[in-house]
Amino acid sequence: MESYAQVLVIAIPFFMVLIGIEAIAAWKLGVHVNRGEDMISSLSSGITNVVKDVLGLTVVIVSYAWLVDHISLVTIQDSWLVYLVAFIVLDFAGYWMHRLEHRINLFWNRHIIHHSSEEFNLSCALRQSISNVTSFIALFMVPAALVGVPAQVIGFIAPIHLFAQFWYHTRLINKMGVLESILVTPSHHRVHHAMNAPYLDRNYGQILIIWDKLFGTFQPELDVDPPVYGVKRPVQTWNPILINLQHVWQLVKDAWRTKSRWDKLRIWFMPTGWRPTDVSQLYPVPEINDFSQFQKYDSQPGRALLAWAWAQLVVTLLLMFWFFLHIGDFSMQEIFAVGFFLFISVYSYTNALDRSESAVLVEFVRFVFSWIILYGSKDVFIGVDSEYSFLKTGLIVWIFFSFLFLWITRKEALQAGSKKMANN
Image (cartoon, helix red, strand yellow):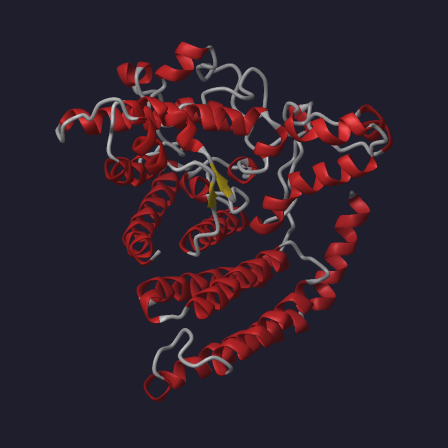
């Protein structure tokens, strides 16, 4: 937990710098790749994902360490070969896990957040799931376990493999010549994030594109058919926590509503998007098929609310970094209290960015909870009371004025929300 948090303290600022470079380059080139609300949603999703991982909220069904201890036939000596085998097998496993997430209803809920942005930029790479609460990717890593690749080697390669998937989430890099035949490039991954034919459910590779070419899922980007980004059932929210719950909630409702017992069971494992016939007729779900009429989600927050949301994001990021740097000083109870506070902060300001009618209430709950953990639990967030008590006071004042801002602007928000509902 603590070591992973320290790695994130280094990695996340690096990603932020690259996002800034992309934004400047896009501005210089006159290419519109970012929207403020979308960036806030993406970065906030990244916050929830890394906090969830640091808290250890994942149940490992089968671990690679267990596999290598029980099924290894030989042991590769510690050399460059063991790292190469680990990298190839990890990439192979990633391809199949990724493909399952796209093809099976239940598993799609683990991945929908990553495709929910209707833009394609480096910040959307940070849209990672908090609903993948189980891990069984080790089942696809049997080849490495059989030849005895040590678990610590996989542990070393895994974060490198993950972070190497960041750079190709951009529209600013065109096709890359011979590399297109070997690696996943920005062009390949633009195809993967597109929802229009013939791009849907293609290019699952993570680092190597050879798996898609071997298993029949490769599709090059076509000049005559530009990618349209997003999901066919638009999420219509900036709130990453709600996005993580949308698909599974639809499955729950469909399983409850259908009269067929067989459909109640199989809906979870059917192809992504499948619904029981009786339910789909009575409760239709809007889906995009005519991409010429597609309009991106726009909650029209206005400059003041957008600026407020940016400020909330920055403060939440700073608190998260402080938390990661000092996580070893907290008790387990305090770690979960701070983690929950970060989650409710993200929920609050992205909910407000949606112009939700519940925005004021949620922010009031955040204010009350912040008071409890800052003054009801010794040393949470700030450290030693006598030395840093003014920072506790500053944080409480900040959240109070955040609540006050939403309270003052609530009438305008309610009017916008009512208008949005009427248009829908």
